Image (spheres, rainbow, N blue to C red):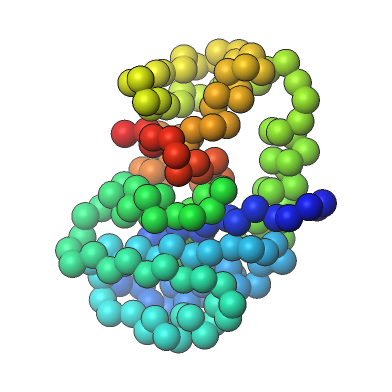
Length: 181
């Protein structure tokens, strides 16, 4: 990868699974891609050994958010997104692990495919975007031209089902624009 690598925020939601969480955190620490940050949202679960997790992460930044009561995966995910500082966002469940090349592979793909020259992109799923002027929906199986693609790149894109835990991936994050609600 040429140039400076963009920060990737990895959002980890957890509740009452500290042993599994530690394995997930270890897999983040083993990433070959840098820089990454971890936004850890404890969704009303048991106390966690945060200092131990910081030790495992080494020089990787940890933003820990402790919720008093369980608010659900969607709310915890949205809270993680709100606190993410990265140019890109990825989710990792507390009971999952990344291969060491996971983030590097995703970023390489995005750089070579998503941000290349082209006339448009074919949408295979519904995306919901909120702009400063209001809500805009993109229909399924719609071709988006290069101008629209640039507009999308400037907004937060959230695959609706991803926040509900039905899909995993990496999303564009832009703090100056609005998120899908």
